[in-house]
Every structure is written in C-alpha cells, then in structure tokens.
Length: 212
Ligand code: DX5
Ligand code: ZN
Image 1 (cartoon, rainbow, N blue to C red):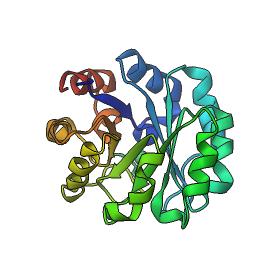
Image 2 (image 1 turned 180 degrees about the vertical axis):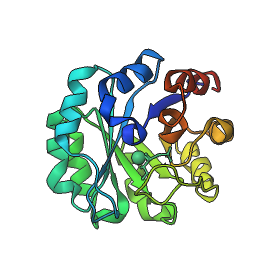
Image 3 (image 1 turned 90 degrees about the vertical axis):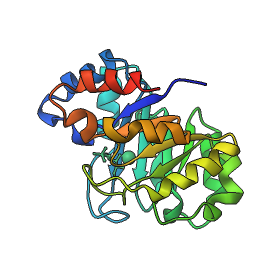
Image 4 (image 1 turned 135 degrees about the horizontal axis):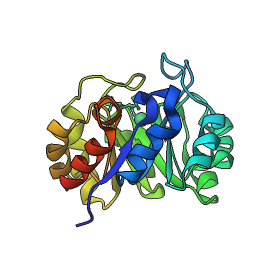
C-alpha cells in the first residue's frame, strides 16, 4: 500500500509569513500544498485567486493542489492551471453537466479532481467517477477552516476504494482522527488548523506522515 499523502491547507497559515510557512511544511516532507479558492458565492467566504497560486509556485516546486470552491469553474480553471496548479478539483454541486469540463481539463497536464460536499451522495457523481483522477470527499461543509470533522461522509471512501479511485479527504482532519480516516482507505489527507494551527507545523507534518 502506498504511504499516506499529506496536503497542508495554507488557508490556516500565517499570511504575514507565507514563504516561511510554506517552507516549514515542504521541508518537513509534505506531499503537496492545498490551496482553497473561495468565491463568496459558492461558499460564503472569499480567499485567493490565481495570483497567490503563481506566487507560491515561485516559492516551491511541490505539487499545488487547488480546491475550487467556486460557482464557475469552467470560466476560471485555466487561470489556475496557467498560474502553476498541478491538481485542480471542482465541486459537483457547482456544475450541472461536468463531462465537457472534465474532458477539457484532462487535455491539459492537470490532475483532475471532483469534490463532493458532505450531503452530496455518490450517486450524483457515479457516471463521472472513472473520468477523473481523484475524488475529494469533504468532511465539513466547505467555506471555512477549523470546523468540526463529520464522520458520516467517511462511508463514501469504502465504495470509492473498491472502484480503485484515489481519495482525498478534506475538513477537520487532525492527528487525533487521521488514523481512522487512513484505515477507511484515504490516500491524501488535507489539514489546515491541524498543521498551521499548531506551534510547530513542520513537526505536525512529520507526525502525520508517521501514521501511514
Ligand atoms: C474548507 C476547506 C479546507 C480547510 C481545511 O472549506 O476546503 O481545505 O482549509 O481546514 P481544517 O483542516 O482546519 O478543517
Ligand atoms: Zn479544501
């Protein structure tokens, strides 16, 4: 079995020291950086655009995992690709007919992910699961860091696992519950406050990596 991949979410980092924060987790051996893009429309919060992705791209070569929590991924995804994103996920709930968008994205050198809110059933993505590279299962309602982990969506992991798809879990992941999520079959763990909210983010990454 592959070892667990850790994706620190920069949403919870100290932005007055962005470069140092990125270096702390990259030097500690994280596998990618998770960048939460929120548009104030799909979710009630506004965060970053492509400018920040390109700035981070200049700090590090590590894969950048851009999570689009936006209403119009069709219009914006290419700006994030051009800014240096390596992986881009968009939400099922935001796009009525995702097939063309997935096909378009797959023509690029982008790893494509489909994200699912906690309340969205797997049936809603059934026809598209094999078309994407990974599924991002949310374990909080998207919009903010530091929310309480929801257990219920973990059931989706087992079904996806049987289909052989790569699974990323996002929301409320801490050292205390990570083991359980790994046992369910997660491949990538996102953690924001569980890493950048700790006194030593590098040490938190190392401890996550020891779990699986
Ligand atoms: C929530 C975001 C998450 C968030 C995770 O809407 O998609 O990626 O940054 O933060 P924590 O780990 O603090 O729940
Ligand atoms: Zn996220």
